[in-house]
View (tube, rainbow, N blue to C red):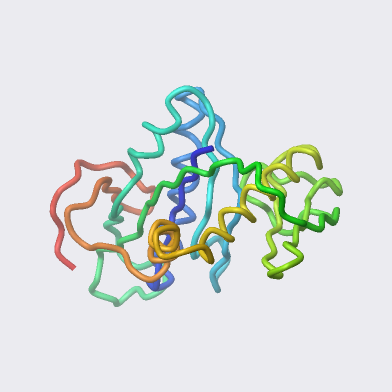
Amino acid sequence: MILLQLSAANGPDECCLAVYKLLAVVMKEAELAGLEVKTVEEEPASKPNTLKSVLLSVTGEGATLFADSWRGSILWICQSHFRKQHKRKNWFIGGAVFELQESNSSTEIKFEACRSSGPGGQHANKTSSAIRATHIDTGVTVKVQSERSQHANKRLAKMLIQHKLDVLKGDANFAERSRRHETHRHVERGSPARVFEGGDFTPSIPQKANR
């Protein structure tokens, strides 16, 4: 399974708004490409309609190529929606891609059914098919609500648990998995892979931008 993470890192509210707007763009482009994109995890920001980060699963033919097209820094050029007198107009967010592997290793996981909380992007369901999974030995917990059935959510929850447990297993695995967490703290500025402009988030030609 391919995971695409969009993150504002430590950026201000404007970057969190960019993540929210970019999510809609990614969903639309994926639909046009015949791909299925679901929200696996999302971290809301302090203001309405803003996101600190969102983790998406991408499935279908060409999923890897599609996800890779969002890898790197993404620039939004726009006057601040929250600080009208603010001079800065360049807002950077980051895109990162990970491959989630299904593991056959035997780990004791406790599954609990629960209702979906929050909007869950565009794919949340309103039933009790959401699953909270807890790894008994470590206490690592995930909540999955992107799939339509408990069985599918359990499968994805198990994969996410394994994804997080890998952080605890040796320097090699830690270095690989920590790339995902690093995107929450740092976004490269300059030479963006994608550029958007204005309040309507219009795509533009990528170009080197100053802070």
